[in-house]
Image (cartoon, rainbow, N blue to C red; front, side, top):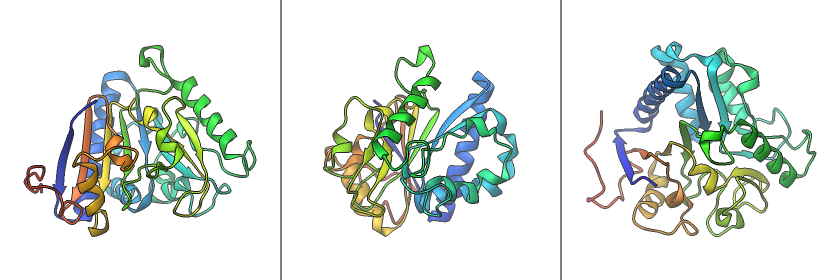
Length: 260
């Protein structure tokens, strides 16, 4: 696994714009190399802020949207179209305004979908979809995502992997149902750490003072059970994208010069 790298921006707006530009470059490079790209999206204010910045980025049309696979790191297990679902928010922020191939937009199942109100069955179904998309050279049960993005919660959770809950302890399954999450809604679906670590690059997004303690904890040697963000690492790169407020409690030895 890769050693975390840090990039600190002045504020959350600049962070979102810079992250969007970085993502465009990564997708275009992957498509130039292999003909397609695979990205895992994250919800929350930072994930949606990045998508909104991407929607207005001048270079967004450099992406071949028809050859981009989109997956999700987690989802709130709610009915299709619910405004709190990550995909609903992603569609509003970006997806409805770009020419994606609907077959390559891999939404996690809704609570009124083919698995009914069974989050565990829905999670197993998403795991099967990931496994079908994995190429032989991926050597695993999920595709080798080019970029997997995660928002970091104030409690250090990423995706719907919360400290001490069973999902963060999972070592074999790639997707699990989450029950009794400490933030609403209590029932969710999430990728596990084994799935997250299959990505070529993992980007962790943290902006705002309420994320400062979480970033400091995750980057200061905490264990992944107590601080799930500490266990989110990419095979070739682990990149923390922060604003100055979220970086304010980092040890000086970790704090890089501010980026424009």
